[in-house]
Amino acid sequence: MIAAASPAALAAAVGGSATGDWFTIDQERIQAFADATEDRQWIHLDAQRAASGPFGATIAHGYLTLSLLPRLTVGLLAVEGASMFVNYGLDRVRFVQPVVVGSRVRAVSELTRVDASPQGYRAALTTTVQIEGSARPALVAETLVLVVPETDSHEAVPA
Image 1: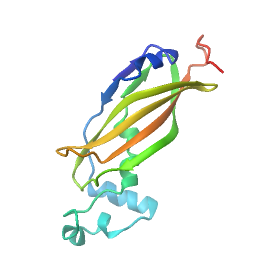
Image 2: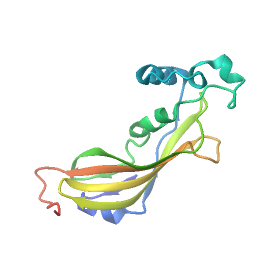
Image 3: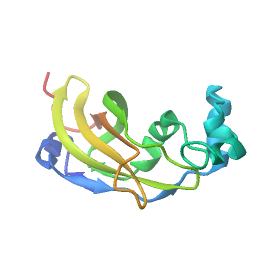
Image 4: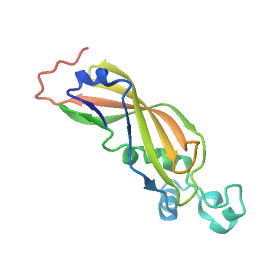
């Protein structure tokens, strides 16, 4: 876990990293994502056709893997005195390798930068989604999180 005693102390944790738990990507989740996004390409949904395709089975949508970052990174960053963490966006995303149905994935996050802002502290993390048994990751992203101090905190946020 990447931990800090306060939002202002988060900068001292730059360079720290943490690893999440394994999570299985099953066909039911792939189907639900296809239904939600209306991306029903055969490589994701047609097991018979995908079996003779380039990956030997259906694969998760790249955006499905990306959308799982909140689940995969839960508990990796702990900041005392923070009222909330807000998804601030992404600066870079690369889909390195597809995730074949039934694979287990996990996130490894490294805190790379912390910048003060009027709302709190923007933390940049390089997050890699690993695939169990593979040397190549599914994706690598620079994720941005706004760490908002508690309102009753005596910590002043720099302007």
